[in-house]
Image (cartoon, rainbow, N blue to C red; front, side, top):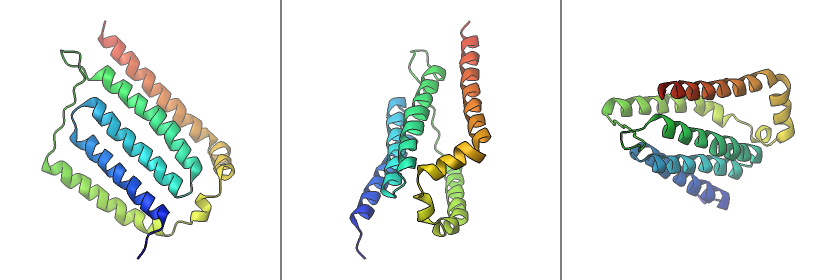
Amino acid sequence: MSLHPAGILALAIAAIALVGAVVVVMTRDVMRLMLGLGAVLLSVAGLFAVAGASFLAVAEVFVYVGGVLVLFLFAIMLVHRSDGDVPVLESRHDLLSVVVVLGAFFMLVATLGPAARALDLAAIKAGTKALADVLLGSMLVQFEAAGVLLLAALVAVVSILGGERR
């Protein structure tokens, strides 16, 4: 079995994502955690690009790396402070959490595996026009409601934390 260059690139990107995920789980330093999460999110964007889904790759970079990662960093820096004004993370790795994660992983693989094999790559590569027709056509209300909900959650967090400091 020989791999094409795209397959080798996908394996390399997946390895970077795996290393980033291990960093996220195992580190206690907030900045290293954010770097690991950034590596995972950028790797997902790279996997989308290798698969030919350029719109999803760009959306992953803009929405998740540019938005969600910055929002997580903002929330962690704002919420979790110690006496020395340093962000604090508490991490407890126990056997039950490993069992739950492995159970959820195998459940996802068992349920989504057949759907992934039946996926038509031509439909994914249909382009941005087909995706825009769905998101800005029949799903416009849900798309905008999700944005309003995220904005309301951010305002609520800031107002709750602002109330604690008075």
